[in-house]
Structures are given as structure tokens and as C-alpha cells.
Image (cartoon, rainbow, N blue to C red; front, top):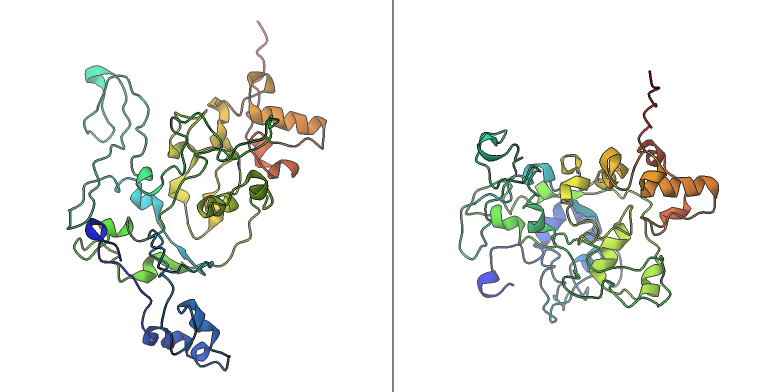
Amino acid sequence: MRKGDAAFADVADFPEHSSCLNCHRQQFFARERPAPAICSNCHIAISPRDTERWLFPSLSDLTDPKLKRREFVSEFGVAFPHDKHIDVVGLNVPASPNRGLFVNALFRYRTGSGSDRVNPDGGPTLGTQEKKPAPPKSCPVCHETYQPQGQSSEEYVTKPPKNIGDNFWLKKGTFKTIPNSHTICFTCHNADSGLAPEPKDCHVCHKLAWPIQLQVDFDPKLPGVVGITDKMILARWGRRISAGAFRHEGGEHPDLNCLNCHNVATFNTIDPKTLKVPVRSCGGAEGCHITTTADEGGALNFENDQRKKDPNFVCTKCHVTFGKEAVPQDHPQAIPTPKPKVKPS
């Protein structure tokens, strides 16, 4: 399916009927015309005379116009343990033919200066000034900035109206990609490496996911107004739970890395509620968006104060549609309590 150096052993087509019959015998022999509905999961024309099938879902990274792609919402989700991968994706793995090789990544705190600087794990240190943890090198392996602005002077995906003001308009680099095929996974998990789970163990990653209804910060009419038709953007945008205006490319947040906001240790990709970003990641007691008082510049403080003064005030600093809703309890709780003033003795 993939040509040249891009080719590797992958699941490229639907299984034989015998694999399905064990569980779906009733659906296979249902008295439905012109054919049982289950046939349409794999076959384009559900007819015994036409065996043409849809492009297998795991080949979503292919762009061959001759292959027909089926648009559907899968009943399965991918269970990916972020906590087990955050520190190992950047490590060297044995190379195999026609397969990429990851490079070393540093995940250590650098403390002290000069000869006094020691890592907690006893390993070597680099540089002389950096005291913060090195940004994770593993996240960009799977998550790249989609349609970044880069050096372009145009920051919006589509041209905004002249009177845009402070109103929302989608900016470039707002979203990150997620893997849409086996390509990255099978770099490490393949028959040559012997690293479990192997490609044949589909059930380890693919889990039946029960639909969880979450309110998302997305107005389905807004993409039409902004002129967005890109399927990848619509998929990411439609599932963004909160902070709809946050732009991942950087912009005003160039020094933040993924772990500043995302607690990957608690991620359960089958449960979207665990993927929510806590409001305190927007600054907390030491940050720029949450301060003790609004006079100190906290955006959350300002928005909360405005809502108290005017119930019709719409919070648009971070949110696209949530700003009209009642203020969540965790927002005011995230604001630090002012320290009592010490009376002079």
C-alpha cells in the first residue's frame, strides 16, 4: 500500500468473513435487502458480484485518489498509555529495514550551576543556564502543529473581516495532529523488535468505547462563518472541550511545553473527561492568567469580576461558546486567597 522506503508490514485490508462470523452470525444472515446492513462496513457495493472494499481505516495517512475512503464514526477508540511512552519514545530503538529511527531525548531536571549541577538520577547535565526541565521530545513525534503560521505575516486560517476587533477568528497553528495510522506505532511495535503489543494483538489498543456526551466549546455554525472546510481542523475543533481560543503554535505562549498544561499521567484516551486541561494550568498562583486580584493582571480574575457585575457579560478571552454559560466552580476556586495584611507592630 505504501511505496518505496515508506513501505512496512501493516494491516492493509479487512479480515476474511470467517473472522466476523464468530460474533456476528446473526447480522450476516439477517433477512435484509438488498443485502445485510453489516456488509456495508467493508464493501462499497453490497453485492456478491462486486467485491470492491473501502480503504481500510488504519491507512488514513494514504492520499491515493483511486482508493475510496469511507466517512464514518468508529465504535472503537484507541487506548494509548501516554504515561508509559512519555519517557521512552525518544530513546534509541533497534533499527529495522525501511523503518525510521528515533533519537535520544533528555527528560531530566537541570539544577545548580557549573560543577555543582547534578541531575536527580545522577546522569550528566548540559549547558550552564537552564534550570527548568527540558521540554519533552516525545510529544512532537505523534503531535505536530497543524497548519502553522511559521514566518508568515498572516496569522488567521482564513481572512477575517476588517472590523474583527476582539471577536474570535480561527488562527493558524491552533490545533495539533494525532496519529491516524499504524505508521508511528509500528516503528517500535513490530515483528522484528518483539516489543509487546505486537501488530497482531489488535485488542490491546482498540477498545470498544461507549459514547460519552460532553459539552464542547464549539459552535457548529461558526466554521461556516469563518469559511473552514478542512476535515482535520473540524475534527479537532469539534472535540475541543474548553479554551477554544487557545493556539498551540505558541504565539503569546512560546515558552510553554506540553506538560505545563497536560497531565499525561492521568490520560485515558478512551475517556475524554480525563483529557480536560485543568484551569490552573492557565497560570495558577505564579501565572499570568490567574492572580490574587484583577489589579495584578489576571485574565480569569477580570472575566470573573465582569460576570459578577453584569450577568450578561460573555467570557471571550479563552472561550468561543462556553463564555455564555455559568462560571464553573473550579474557576473561582483557582484564584489564590489574598494573604492577610500584617499590621505594623
